[in-house]
Image 1 (tube, helix red, strand yellow):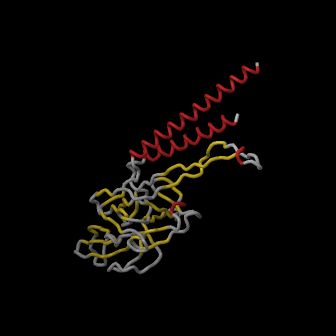
Image 2 (cartoon, rainbow, N blue to C red):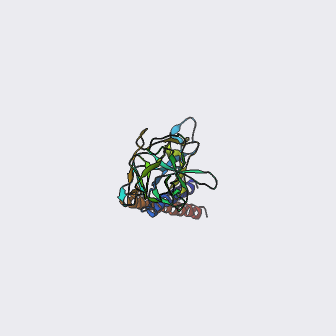
Image 3 (cartoon, rainbow, N blue to C red):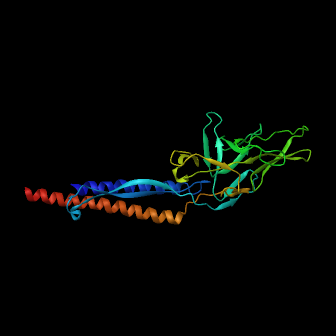
Length: 271
C-alpha cells in the first residue's frame, strides 16, 4: 500500500507546483511582481538500522516556496511620480489607519489634493526629512507630504523625483523646494519577507528588521524617474515548468493506476 501514498504525495506536490506556476503566469504583467518556485525534499521511511540498503523512500514533500527577487525589466512611462529601483532595495509605505509598514518594488505613486504622496492602495510613501536644498535632516522615515502652497503663498505646480530620491516641489512663482528624500529599505535576509498581496511584503523574524537608507547608499540602487519595474516572470520558462509539472502529475497518476492493477491481481489470486 505504500506505493499508493508515495504516488499520492507526488500528486499533491505536482498540484502545488502547478499552483505556484499558475500564480506566476497570472502575474506576468503585474508591476513589481516577483516570481516564486516550489522546492521539494524526499521523505525516507524508517528502514533497517543495521543495513541502510533496506531503507525505502516514501516519496517527496513540499519543503518551501522560495521567492526570486531578481530585477525585472524597466518600462518607461514618462510619468514623473513613477519610480523604478535600479538595484536592490524596497520602497517603504505606511498604512495610516493602523500604522503597519509595507515594502514594495511597485513605484507607482500619486499625489492627492492635500499633498500626500501614496501608492495606489493609499499607503503613504516613506521619506527622510530634508531642508529646502535636499540635505537629509532626519534618520527616521516619515510620510511624504508636499505642501500645496509655499511660504510665499504660491500654489504647487509640479512634483518631481530625482535619481537620488530627492522629492522636489515646483511652485507657481518659479521657486523649487526639496520636501523630502525617498527612504529605501533593505533586509538582512530578504528571502524571509512575507508576501501579503498587491506586490507588498512585510518583515518577519526570518527577514530581520528593515534597514533604511537613501538611494545609491549601502548597496541600494538608484531611482529611475518616469519608469516602472515590470514582473520578473519569464513566460517561456514558466510554460516549460508548467509542462514538466503536468507530466509529473500524469506520471504519479499512472503509478497509482499501476498499483491498483497489481493489488487487484493479488486479490484475484488470493480468491
